[in-house]
Amino acid sequence: MQKQLLDRFFAGMKSVPFQINYWDGSVVTYGGEGGESPRFNLIIKEKLSVVDFIKEPVMSFGEAYMDGLIEIEGRIEDVIRLASQNTEQLWSRVFSSILSKFTTKSKQKNNVQHHYDIGNAFYSLWLDETMSYSCAYFRSKEDTLQQAQLQKIDHVLRKLQLKPGETLLDIGSGWGWLIIQAAKQYKVKAKGITLSEEQYKKTIERIAEQGLGSLVEVELVDYRDLAARGEQFDKIASVGMFEHVGQTQFPVFMEAVHSMLADKGLSLLHTITHAKEAPTDPWIQKYIFPGGYIPSLREIVNLLPDYNFHVLDIENLRLHYANTLDHWAERYESSIDEVQKMFDERFTRMWRLYLQSCAAFFRTGDLHIHQILFSSGTNNELLLTRDHMYMDAK
Image 1 (cartoon, rainbow, N blue to C red):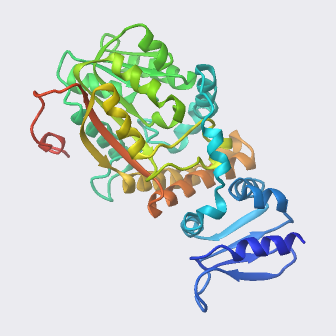
Image 2 (image 1 turned 90 degrees about the vertical axis):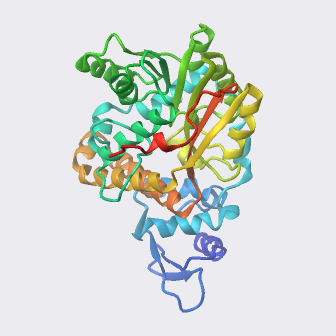
Image 3 (image 1 turned 135 degrees about the vertical axis):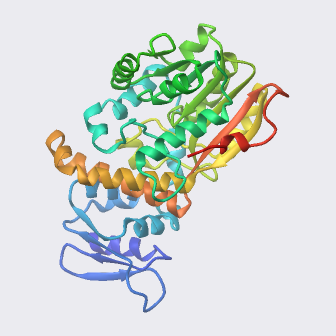
């Protein structure tokens, strides 16, 4: 019965030919046009819970891979392409109701710490030397990961048109390299905020090492609490944090930025996006980013006028993130022995699947990443062209 139900399920998956090796030794090819060779092979080593698999196939597949019950032979990008072209069968609209739950400050802090407080030692194995955990910016395919991350930071700072003496806030400042570079390059007074204890401690160390205590500070605080204090900044950046805010809290986030951004000030929002509103991947929601929600571009743009924000520039960096994830996945695999010393086999397989599948999702076009630059009110004193974003760039 289990095999019959799985056979019926897989038979409904179209567009990409694939092969299933069942636990009883039988091999069946599905999908695609007749005569086309399978793009990948899934080896199901043991019987799966068919009820769970049919009800939540994405979750069940992810957990089965983590537990070593399923192996993948072939490119994971082809697996993701199949999933992307059969979304109605894989992602139930039931999950949309989950996303509407209110995200409290304490819950958001717990969610952030679930992901980022795994430990600096873990992230340092596969991130670059700047410890930048967001989409890099590649000027060429030959760029190293560190080059591309430094170029991303430079790209963000150029867009903000920073001037000496200005104040900059980075919401979700990670391990602090953006605020450090801003102070070093532009002589601004930069402040970062994070909810991660590990990121906070590392940023404190870096500020001291760079001798930038007079220009750079970091605080372990929620953006809502910072806004309630009445602090204001000339420029505000948020890189890779908006995905943690939660759909119901988008207006709260925008109101906080509105209250903290000086009149005519600039803000840059760098976030993963969907082409249209969609439920969060349930496996990602449970194991990687609890409480997360990836917005559509139009959700963000539609919000901005309500807070007197004027869009100045929108850029899509989709392939840059695919390349970034390729680097991360490669560095992760090269450090796999160290990862296995820190964590168990299930954790190791979970992160492998996460990094490789995300790279594939960006390549197939189901995920995008946008940088959205906007001003608080009308600013007629900005540079007229985008030349400053590329002039003298190395």
